[in-house]
Image (cartoon, rainbow, N blue to C red):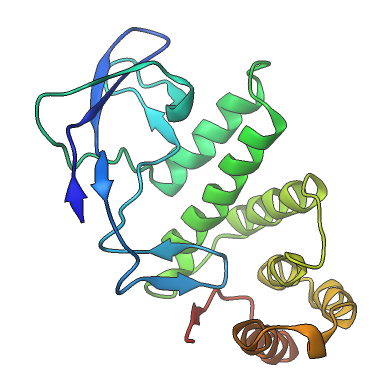
Length: 207
């Protein structure tokens, strides 16, 4: 990993400037991949696509902002907590300038944040209202995604994480197992095994 000079973005609401990580190069060596499609790569850290302004506390899309180059590097990624992702999603939903793809990106990261908070590192008791909220986000993601044979495994996984095992089974039944690549067939079996056990937890993919 080789850091470059920081990317300096400006809050569109109050004008506060923020230095963010910028990479000249990186790689996926030692990366961990999870069933919710989150990748944790020590040598390829990613800046959060949604940033929270440290001055006014409002949320904005990082890629949409004009930026300057700093004089030195920065390790700041602007990562959000699960509660901050929830707040950002609520705020951005009411912003008429936000595109459908932008909202899908936020939902994708909100799913990751939920799993980070409750499931990924250690099993934490999930309040009923949080679980219901999570299932609602999953439904919104599924309803707004264009599904095809290349991403149907992820659809099955989302239904499993939502605890909707019959729908998970229905999606798996429509996937041609014989035509899957080797790593895909392993993921298929992992999803199927957990589905049969009524296991909703995200899992680490070992390939």
